[in-house]
Length: 359
Image (cartoon, rainbow, N blue to C red; front, side, top):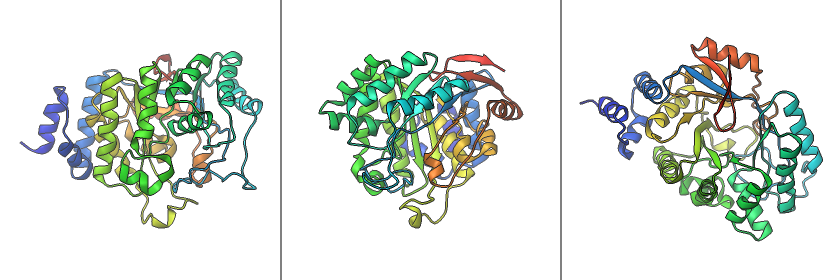
């Protein structure tokens, strides 16, 4: 039996794929046949021809960071003339802007700024919940929470308990990059190995938080590094079921220290393979997100035929990719049109993937 036929039989009968099969999907599987199988599995798990999206924004509260990740063009060291940190009221003005445009989620992130106390973060959450009850505070990546814990002298669990008490219920999955010890030593040695990211999400899921799992590929990783990532998040999902979606995107090298090492930016074919392989390998993830923002709107439409069932968000504000000279924008009306053009029914969702409205 051909490898894809074997994989198809396992995937459609609820049997878990093994590492060697995942490697074949990432390196050798015929792309169109792989996409067709991923779509078949997608519809087996999610029969409706519905593609969801969230109305959201992605502002930043500071660009000050001491972690020196080689892939980041956004951060500035403390004391840099271009460094900035917003006050609580300035951040809440950005939340107000998003709320006025209909956002139900604000994904807030920043650098690792050791000058900010725990109360700054807790106040951002509690005031967002108080002033904008219709907006879910989807705040702070795992590495930011690790920084808060270190600065405040608390454990990761303590910080999460206090965020929960302030009203937060979900975490973004950013900061994962590739969960491979080799890769993280190379591109972000100060951020810690895979366990640094996994600890935050494991402790969050234990407490009832939901989160996403992301991947930023297309820099120094190889197939085995990608499989380390898949294995890590699939294993954590087995424990608590706290991940709502897998969200991969390709690295944008502009103005980063990694730029000189990147010979060729990964294109849409690699992206579509990643989506399809993840749909098959991550058998316990309910949703796979098509990143129109990082890959382009047409690639996003095609992704909906390669196993993805979610379009992501509107991202009224986004600054990290912008710092790398990569900018895409979209309106709600355009999202609805793009999803319909791709042959699906658009539906607005919450951060937790509850359907609010079908179009």
